[in-house]
Image 1 (tube, rainbow, N blue to C red):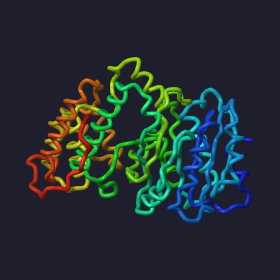
Image 2 (image 1 turned 90 degrees about the horizontal axis):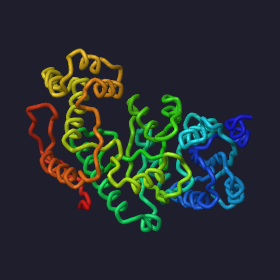
Image 3 (image 1 turned 45 degrees about the vertical axis):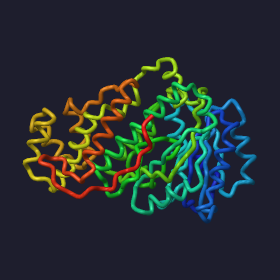
Length: 391
C-alpha cells in the first residue's frame, strides 16, 4: 500500500473537505502539538467539519504519529495521520512535502483548497481565513509570511540577529520598489516576498497544473511558487496569512532554516539569500519586467522593444522569442536566460547598509507612478509603503 492509498482509506465515504492542510513531520513529537493547537485556534473559519489536517509522519524514530493520534479527539477538525518511510532519494524536505501534499490532494474534491505548513510552525489566528479569503478573491495561490519564534530568536547570537534584521529590512524595501514599478492587480500593496513551506495555499487546479511539489531536495517551496509563476498563476503574497516559525539551530530538515543559520554562524560573510541582489540591478530587473509585460499586452509603444534590447545588450531575436512565448511567466524566464545583465550576483552582508540606503533613495525617487520605458510618464504620487527604519 502506498502512502497515498493509505491516506485515502482514512476517509472511505466522507465528502471532500473544504480545505486540507498537509503537514510533513519528521521526529516532531515535541513540537507538533503546538502546531495542531494553533490550527485548532483558527476561530475565523466556521464549520470545522469542512476542514481536515493530514500529518505525514515520515521516517520517524520518535512517537510523532502516536502523539498526533492521541490529540485527535481534542481537535475541532478531522485529523488524519499517515506513517511512511521514504526511500533515501525522497528522505529530505522536498520529498516529504511532496508526499504529504500528494496524500492531501488524493483526498481533495474539485473545490478543495490545499494548504501546507510545517510541524514545528504555529499559524497565527486568522491564518486559515486569510488564505481562503485570498483564494476566494481570485488568487490561484497564496503565499503567507513568517516571523521567527520570539523566544528562540532571543537565544541567537547578536551578530546573527543583526544580519537577519538587515536582510529582512532590505527585502522589504525591494518588495516595496517592486510594488511601485511592476504593480500587479491580483497582488496589491501591502505584500511581501516570502515563499515558505510554512505557509502555502493553492487551488487543486493550480496544484495539478504544475505537477505537484517539485521533486527537489531543498527549496521545494520556492520551486513550487516559481512553477506557478511560469504558468501565470495569480499569486497573492498575503501579509495577513502569518505563521510563527522555529529558528532553532538543530532543525530536522537537511538544507532548511537551521542549516542556513549554522552556515551563517560559521561564515559571517556568507552570501545573502540567493534571490537578493544589489539595488541597481534590482531596479533594472523591475523596469525590464514591467516593460516586457506592457509590450506583450500592447500597452507600450513598439519603440520600447528597441530600448529593452539595447538596455539588456541582447539581440533582437532573443527579445522576439520572449515576446512570442505563450505566457508572461515563460517570456520572462526566456528573457532572464538570454540577458547576462539579468543574472543575479551574490550579495555580501557587509553591503547591506549601503544597499538599503540606495533602495530607500529609489523609493523616494520613484514614488510617483512611472512607466518603465523612457521617457517616464508623468503621474500622481502613489501611496508610499511605511517601512520600519533600517538597522
